[in-house]
Length: 159
Image (cartoon, rainbow, N blue to C red; front, top):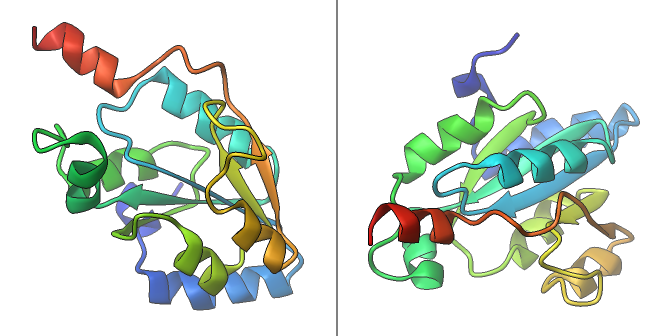
């Protein structure tokens, strides 16, 4: 079993690593998210995403991008810790940090076979759908219903 720190990669490291894996015929799935206050919905999403391929690569939003998305008081957990937590999940093969508002640039660079999104999306509403389809990839929606939320957990913890 690999240590979680061995799963954390840079975009450059992933680019060459995934090229080799794809050349071996392995199917690459990419998922992404903030993963602030990791919960069972995150685990179910990532496990379901992993079922669609041979390797699961997870893009974790940087602290700055989480602030842009969720507000100035977020994230609750710093980016390095969120990377380590996500990397520790058995379903996850590799994780990396990203700053961009969408995954478009990264998807065009890594070209995963599948982009997995949670059930708060439909295939038609995934922001990067056209990018994924442009290089022959596909989008899948997976995980359990959106019944879990870091934002809601924080609301309950910090009245």
